[in-house]
Length: 506
Image (cartoon, rainbow, N blue to C red; front, side):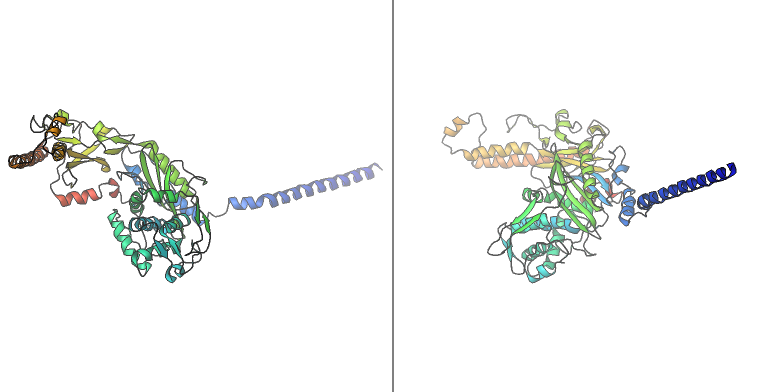
């Protein structure tokens, strides 16, 4: 009896253990069903975009190789540049001279040419070629052949909606006959603006292997584009709205999808304007401008991955505004302090008092890294200047990086101009003489003319003497050097690419 009971209890225990084991196996099975998809995601192969992003983030940043230059952020873009708009100083550089497809950022050049050559109320008529050469899967506003918009409406459609058929129509309007003829105008304008390695074949950036530019070149175009207040305002507009008219029957409403402008997901407080672009070959591109505390910066990122183009741009703007400052040269420079030389003054003469003959332009400034002292930078003087009343230009560099320049002006010439202006106001009645008794007056007669000629000759002699003295005079001060460039061609060749970044093959 006891053995029977014991056998029964043992059998029941086996059943209990079996059920527990089954429950544990079921729990493991359901857990695998729940978490296996996540596990597969974790161990999935990275996408092509992710691989490209990591490879581009590992690329060298050439500006970080300059001794004591502020270290710039790592960005995902294959090419990136941050440039100060007024001086052209390059603050950040990553492959800035590498050819890239610009996609719709091309349209900043098209719009710049249009606003310079056309009035805003001109009517632009859409041809068959302009409408039907536009791929239907690309950005457009569905304008029909034979319809017309004003140039103002066209620029809004190009910069807000990035409408490709509108860019074709504007190109035809300017070049005549075919939009293909507009490419020559684009390339001439790009060269005029200082582009070095660009070639444009269409006005909108649609894919073409012969349509390319660089981050540096787009920044140079951007300097002119963002100097135009109307174009900047258009790019910041949240919505395109074109009312029906006699030449176009539809109400056209399109939202601005650029996320850097106010209301966008990556809005930047100091933004002046921007233009995006995207094609499969170009990837995400962005040209933008921001201004803070009187310093205006232009940023270009090319061949980036979305939304990295916005994050990279914000990081570069923050880097620029935090690590660089504008320095007024006339208020800071001591090496070329004319007051201390005693050799650039006129004596008491026809000008009525002793005044300096040369002075540094008080409006010129340079861009100085906060990691660098003004005493650490180098300067050279160039006499190759065609500016009115300018004796020379002083060019400032740091380890070969061009950071700006200042004009060296003749002040005596200004005083002389003022004297002759006053003389022209006098009618010889004597009343004028009494009213301006404290002001020098010159009456035009033979003697005075001869004296004027003698004075002009004397001034010319003084200018020539000053140039001669400057060429042989060594200014005291910091360890900077004064270099006189006699070979104009050599100077132009050097100054054209004065940035050290050319040596790094950006």
